Amino acid sequence: MLRENIHMAFASMAGNKLRTLLSLLGIMIGVASVVTILNLGRSVSESISESFEVGGLDTVNIMPMGNARETMIFTEEFSYDIEREVMGIKEVLPTVSSYNHVRNGQEIVTSIQVQGVTSDYFASNALETEDGVFFSPAENINRRQVCIIGSELAEELFPEGNPVGKYISVFRRQAKSFLVIGVLKERDESLGSSYNNVLFMPYNTYTQRFRRTDQVGTYVVKVEDGYDATAVADDLERYLNQIAGEDYYRIFSPATIKEMSDNVMSTFSLFLAAIAAISLVVGGIGIMNIMLVSVVERTGEIGIRKALGATPKQIRSQFLVESVTLSISGGLIGLVIGTLLSLAAVRIAGWTLYISIGAVIVSLSFSLMIGMFFGWYPAAKAARLEPMEALQRD
Image (cartoon, rainbow, N blue to C red; front, side, top):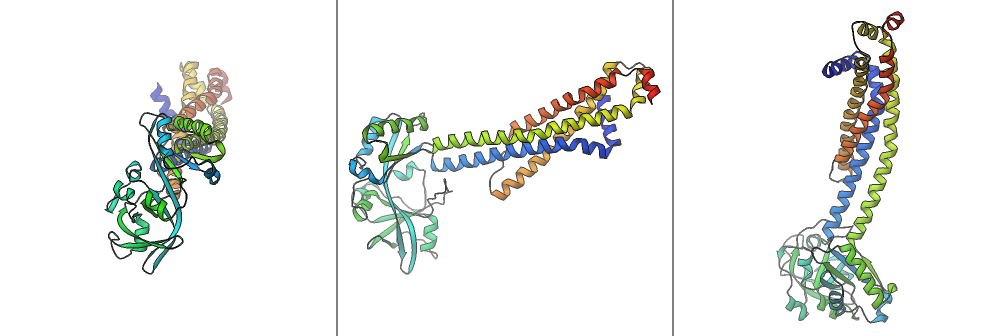
């Protein structure tokens, strides 16, 4: 009986193509809108997550403010205090940085970020060399004038060959010569920042050559496996408030920002999807109107079937299946359209498309429920018709 009802539903749809298209339109638009919004929301969220993961979700950065010098706290030695006093910390890496001019003979590159880091910095940030090697702890201790440069900077300074083993000049107040011992592998950007255009030198070399203060620029805190980076950031904040005061530093936690970003994106996507879902209700009203017209047009058919022994339940099932078939068909077409729109949007934006399974399930479930809800009244009306009355009307 169900198969027969579905066959009759498709036959009715095929016999009234224009009316079928108009009745499907609202459902199609509603489902396509919901699917597109939720797919794009997930794709944006995943893209942001990937960007955070490149920078490291197990990292918390402590940045002393300019007025922190008066506290005399934020020195290289303070990194050991942080590691000792706060649970869940794997290591604390002090870094310093500034923007300088870099030159190779006549080739000058301006406003390059120059960072002074310890030898552990590269492994902690999963950095690799394309050519050459990283500097050693001994080279940091002995303040060797060696450096490692990003892939983009290497191409700008040495467009014709490998820079490893060659010298470049770094300008602050005066030029200082550094031996290039390594070139980093290209790395995706993280939160708008990139390692590809940075010059790294030993921390102690930097502080001796370019900096006249003991204050650290940034502490890169690595969180132990099994600890929540957001919770560690909160513990760090409490500890620093006790030691220095909240006016002398800022904390940047990718994990905390990612969590906030995910919450905002989820709420925003659901809000837009709820607005788009209104189209589904409008589509459901359209299906109900079409089904009521269909009942009137097929009054004679209903009378004949009842005269031949069809029960009110069978008549009701026939029209209810037709309504659900219309609604599900519109939902499936809308699902395809929404997916294609999502694919086009992410290609334009340069993201990766992530299909929201939740969007698929919710959209098709809503289509089914709308078909049943808005098809019930026309189906019940058809089931209540008396055979003689229906034949006389026809």
